[in-house]
Image (tube, rainbow, N blue to C red; front, side):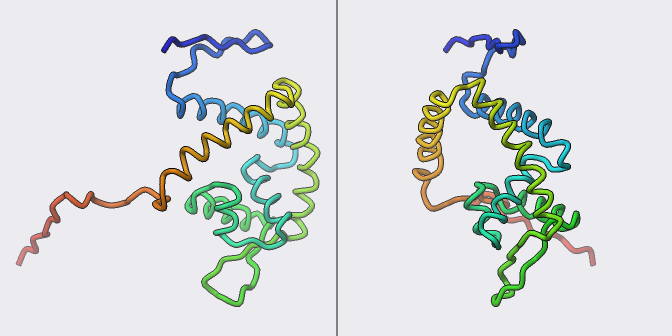
Length: 178
């Protein structure tokens, strides 16, 4: 597969894209994330934080599982982000009849931060859609939805990576000096 140089409309050469789907998607994701972060900077939120707050704001109160599924984010990353948002006072834990369920809701500070960030997010969104075109984006969404289906749905019920030693690795016994 031949690598092609990518030149932006601004004339900036991004160099050759990787033939690896994952590498190319990660490169694009990092660049688009940076674009949104730059536009959102005056709000004090990063785009990942904005997405979490917007989801909680839309649902009203959300637990970890709802956020993981809606945002397609792993629990470790989500928990780290939620802890920072809670520390900053934009989100708080909501009481839940089942104490094992960690539910979150926006604080008044969080609602204000989200409202301040919405027009900035819309500006970033408009910028990307103007450059890409709404028809091209609709086509890309269809293709990405199919890729998501292939990558996630067909993978089967095992969602996470197995941690720890492989089953075939022998178990070591520690020697205690005595």
